[in-house]
Length: 133
Image (tube, rainbow, N blue to C red):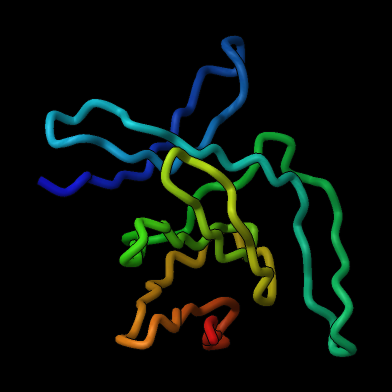
């Protein structure tokens, strides 16, 4: 059976600690196989000249901003985050890469998809991005 995927937001009472945000892979019995935590603390904006301006204002990281993850033939998981990045996460919860798209929106919840050539279509701040070769 294929692995199951889930987003997990753990919110603790202020006296118990900060929020934590994870992407997790589960086995068919719903045991956690691995997890990847959002740790980026910077809100960034892509400027008209192509430069990026960032401020560190999210000490607990950002929530994952997805309806469902994309998983390619090699098991790489692609997920949007509220920090404006599209993440590639390898099996075992290993960070592979992230691509900043446009803006840290904090609530976009836009879908992403992959075509038959492996290109990923993602949306951020009303712009469509195509990632791939």
